[in-house]
Length: 358
Ligand code: PEP
Ligand code: MN
Image (cartoon, rainbow, N blue to C red):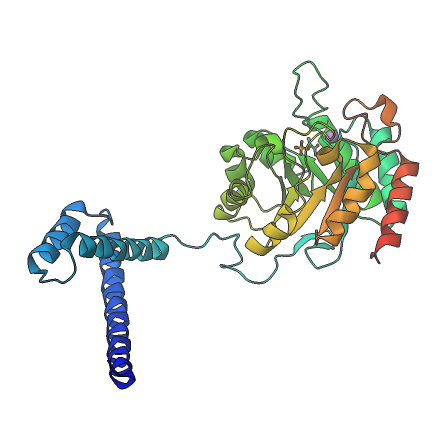
């Protein structure tokens, strides 16, 4: 065969390829139309009877040279791709996804714009224990020009015999301190029934790791007009974490801050394993601000600073860490909270590490 003949055959083949391309896309368009009709009729997209009919028709019409089984295999792939096309049309992008909203969501906490590209800080005791204890931390936070104070009033503890928090009394203390020091306060709510009352006292609802898939709580938090800080579950995948945020958003509340707080692994050197790469993944996949809790992820005071640096370097929108006036006598998480002096040192070191807005 001459080179000229070969070139001619190749040209013919290119031509057929383009015809197949046109036909495949023509088929895809029809499949999409069928998908729409099925959606309105509420019937299943996959129809085995119809697929069998099409495969049989291919068998009877086949004149070769391809074996019928080969052709059926190829057509099965085409059918499968068509079905996927219908499902992609159906599966709408999540509200929290970047696909749905490319620009960053900024959550305004009394003027602290979380997600504006600058680092923000949430400090405060693990639990609100008394007015004096909370006010001491508030004073230190205020003295550093910061705005966000945390403190647990409803504490989800591993043991039912451990300090469970002051409950509503704790929220009242937070409210008093917030007013006196002009701070925004954040506290965990564990019961959907408490949300309505709690939002009278706090500026941010925290949903803790143990409740990340408490769907009734997520729906309740999604139904109010109050920012929510959602922490990643102890054993939650990033996909599950994003879907938990979607629960909140789906009810109308889009003011959500995600918080990576470590996941449980076989590693025992730290309380949890800080999944640092979750930060850029969450920022890519969603438009929500992402903070890192260095206290609960490490459970180690000596690791608070290096992990906070890592979090800021990788693009976190902020850091959460626990501060107690006297950690040695704290009623919870005594081993890992910073005292006021350590807190000031921590902030100085972070300031030195990168320029930080006060
Ligand atoms: C907390 O922040 O007080 C807390 C209990 O954290 P987590 O839910 O991440 O364990
Ligand atoms: Mn704690």
